[in-house]
Length: 210
Image (cartoon, rainbow, N blue to C red; front, side, top):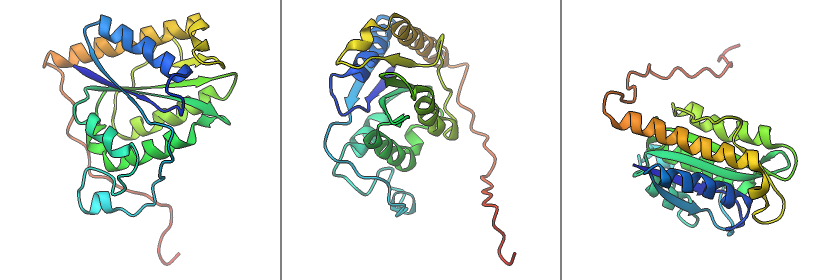
């Protein structure tokens, strides 16, 4: 079993990486393989709503000059997903959000129904709003959201400082153990993802002629 860990910080070794390392180390101790990936610090694209990924059934984004498609490729082999990002102005870092929206749209088939969790890392505030924002795509893609003893949040400013957040680190370890427990129970074979979705009924609240 394999869990993809996405570091959505522009800093490769910052507090987001440190929080994800706590998760990774615990997963490995539980016998779960981990695949960490960093989105990098180069410019990324936002979705332009061209719809080509869906119209042509590409399973990838038409733009191939940032980390989006590489992460989609890794998602194909992932049994579980943990995403982490720093909090900027009460929101997940913009570069991460731009990438993740494209990944969840173009690569939805590789995210859907997989156990998933989000981690928000901040200096002081805005963490719960960012945490909620990061979980929303998982809810739309029928992912079982893996919880912990508290919201998956860690606090720190200087590089690696969140390691001093003892409750935050415990929350990361508990999250990892819960992820391991769920994956192992799913792996037994007596629990399979539900496939009886109703046809989508979009409602836009606008009626022609009104």
